[in-house]
Length: 406
Image (tube, rainbow, N blue to C red; front, side, top):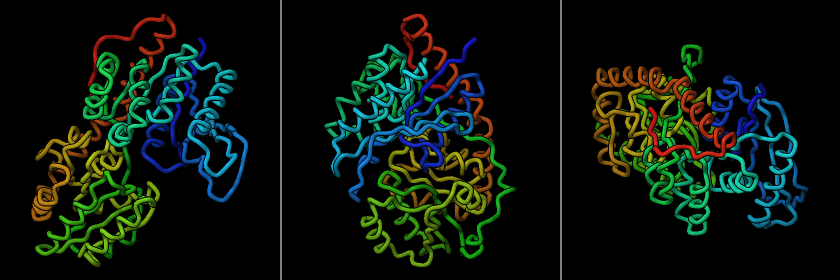
């Protein structure tokens, strides 16, 4: 029996840094282990913007990477301000060449704004089944650009199946395109077991005084770091603490964060590591007293799952998968997003109660092992793939129930 051949389209893929790329890599490996032939097509509209005057032809570079056939597509650059429609046109043409060569049985797009749009258009035109996966910013942020609304709604309406990493995202999609209720499922990302004992402690942790409150990631508008700065500023007047930010602020928001940091009165109590590898980030986690994730919106962040795996005592916000995964008072503490006061109270509670930190951290670690194991996510994906491939095999509808899968 021939293997089913799938093409996943994505904005990023390792070694690119980003949660979407990590998720696509994880899912691709799950599909390979189940018997699928997996191709990943990587393209992003930002790559069309080249400021140094460079010009180039459209291209597609193909390599075999960890058993996955990876196609990195670049649009042509004929002038400094290439229009978005030229980018989409080039990518569509490259997908057409790939399909002519490999004859894909199914397309699966991650992030519905650009990858989802061009992939869905191609799949529908060639009568191929299409899955779209909403990750977070596509419906939390980009939907508010009026130019994107019609495109996003069209993608949702024309998907054979749509997946979400939180019920918040699924609820918003249902409001935009009611037909999504009949062809969607929401389930969390997973995380493979991590042996933290094999990771060398970063030397920096020995230099940090007091209670260490940490957060990790690429810090940007949606992460709510302003409120964490305010909370720790107030809390530092009462207890000895260090706020450790593992990562850095995104480049386009540098001026904003420079101003925020200048106004913050933490001084030497604030430590920012700068960009780190995933292994370096993981090595910090067991040495934190508290892990804070004060996001305003966030899909299902890998940073949360990693902190749970490390047994961190977690303070998170009631948004997206953070508020769904963490049970307040059982395996972490939850606060409302955008509230420095609530954040300070929760941090203070954990900072002054080491036994509570230990209890919540241990419970979070157990939940990560039991409910966020890759085998559970793999079962969800295989079920969806089998259902959607049936469309191509039989030309039938997929079902009549929206699912939330834990």
